[in-house]
Image: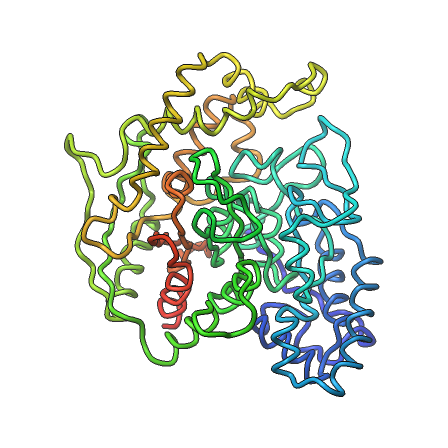
Length: 491
């Protein structure tokens, strides 16, 4: 099994500390604090990321890199820091720029000023945004430096990051396998040590799936939690933005910025995580289910390692003092999830594509799966689509009902190991979609419900792949989820 080699060390003139040439060598907070102490510069950190990205193009992490702009921004930050350090304390600098000097990248579905925006498709020419999307602006104003745009599937639709524009995003744990999607390129970059963390967005699992595939922590916040996201309560509003990182602590750092929280203030994710690691968290009751909402329409079979991950996740929570209330699997007529989820979600997932007026020549240039989705949506009777959305809206409106007596739910994350590159695309489109559902049978339902959920890697199989559990919380529990992950991963 091929694995990614350690990130290469930059030339001596590009860094003052060669032990920090790989972003897996320290936490994001430690990198930032090194900048504040003058041990490493913003230019050196940015050069480290760019050097690694250029040296490992076969990973398929990036669609575009912009070294000139990134280094210019880093130089500007170093100059500004030199001036501010004369009068401001490190605490003040941290509060003003919590991500100071840290390189990152946005997936190529997010507009970033001056960087090509392709949406992962060749069916339309790339555009060059004049300004950042609100989320990108918020992250940049916190001191982070974008080095490029990361690989995505076409329009962010599939759960694997392959398109006709660049190399597929490969899994650093096994280069023959996919890193998932749609934030696959970003997950690849973080798992390979090219970046300390990356912002993603998640409409059906697009943060949690690649995080699980690559052994990372990935948070999908609840609907309306991120101020730059659409807060509409409609079930059609599936998308929310969240962090991907190697540790819960780093995910908390980025989440606080994305959520508009400055510094380690009371109630921040960082403070909640640190308090949990220093002492303990309040005991919670956790329900466990391995039933998928896609069942019984699809036969969902969990790999042995997926079940081992569930057992390890349960054990980690129990060691931390939480109460596991037993399995809530439903094999009889009474279902845990809503009826007809498989058909209804497919209608919801493809509805917007049917409303867009693609020209014939555009359709011809799209991936077969995208063409299939467009044709499916256009051929579906409007009343059927409306009925499916209404059913899921009612399900979402009563989201808290799924918790019953529990504070939180635990499910598997992925049912099987990440498939090899090209496996999904080699299937006919209808089967492709079905196999994606079988691979990721627990993620999309959380988007439908608008709840926060977190991927926690808890098990490594004998072949070196990572396996995770998913924690699903009630609205407003993102900080609590991150704290739980930190305690689970501590041992």
